[in-house]
Length: 102
Image 1: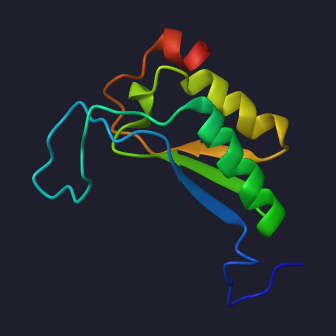
Image 2: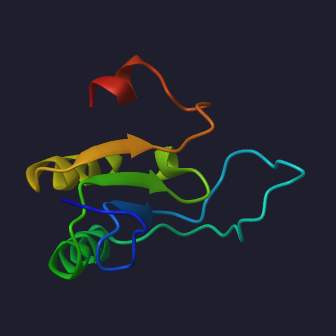
């Protein structure tokens, strides 16, 4: 059982930044944007490290705009294969039937 207050060791949620790219410019955005995304191997390593260090149950895929990552479907698969529930923090601009199906 996870009890409040959560700590780094017991917090059940992980926010994983997968890219620093974005396709819009919000006036209030605090993210440092660049043209890069994180390699799939690094993301997988971060997931495994988090699972070794705490009782992660859910993962939010974030960044500046995670739908710009070219391997987003593979990242979602990595999350699900570990028995975790995932969510996507997105501006929604790139969401379409093809991406959602993938």
